[in-house]
Length: 245
Length: 241
Image (tube, rainbow over all chains, first blue to last red; front, top):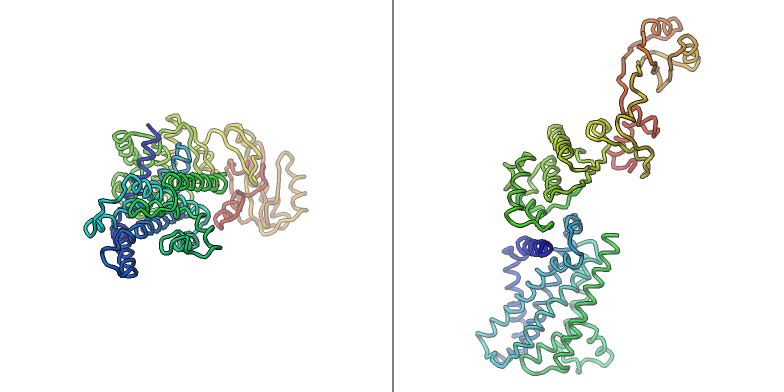
């Protein structure tokens, strides 16, 4: 019980300090809106293209929403020594880091539903397989957050975290099947697509919205879950080695 | 010294957050935060943001955050360094009270008088190693009953030093610096004969001052480091760790 009091208060403090700040709320809304607009302009096929555009907008909103926040909640707090107070708390490191990342996971998930709510007013979403879509959104949020965490704990400056994130974010966006189907990518780039967690999340999103998945949902979600475990494990290892030892 | 406080938070919120890290319930942490803010003289600033606190207030809030869960042991690293005199006095009093109420405190400090006043046992650390550890009573025992006079004169020399030692048996003389003679004895020192001897040997005495021996003398004797030098080094950002 005591551990969960700590967990809840760390999450609450992060929500209050970072996520529920007016600029962040407006950014969280505007960013998905901007992506939606860009995708519509690019596709040029009107409201009928919403089901094909939606997976991309959802994925990109989650990816940018989560990875950007970890640079602040982790790297910044480490740099100004606020993190030391948390590391001294009598809670396991795993729980502490889950508490520090829970805000980003929530933020990413909420970001994902901004374009979904918009799309619900403009298009018929009755055919969406929500039982696959929702877990995919949550798992993409978790994987992206842990990717952000992995980067945030590997650097010491906030700008390094932001810059380093782009080395992962942009190749991931272009190779995960959002803009171009993976099978239409050059043969030598196709294996690279399967190295990124977003590929598997996007596949479920495509499948659940307009039935265009290339792998079974169970396989996609399992691999996405494995990415979450590995990225979280690597981040914890890095923290134990560099920040505590 | 813990410094990792969230800058945007008010004092009360920060204390409650630190209490929550130790699993304290809402009602308990709010009441404990109020109690500590009162005790640390921070009640008026309770709802002000931490970033606007003075250095002394920040230090007090940091210590309050460190004891909110009633720890049995508290580590304080130079708690009074760099803060104003009134805050430092208040902090020393708070540390003393905590100790009297049963908290074991490990205090590191460059202020030897602070260690002498607050601590039961003192360890001298040189280059990261404990070179001596004992109770304050045991440490000061060798200097209890010693009498010291420091004489300032126009000139000193080894010949003069030898002459003094010969003329005043049972009294120890040393030359700690140019123009200075340190006189130490187990019985009260009569300065008249000393001054006359020095003047007869061509040295004009400008000052003769009775010195109170302190723990600092013991520190210098044991470590070979002058406390002033150590403090100056520390203030420059270097010095022995």
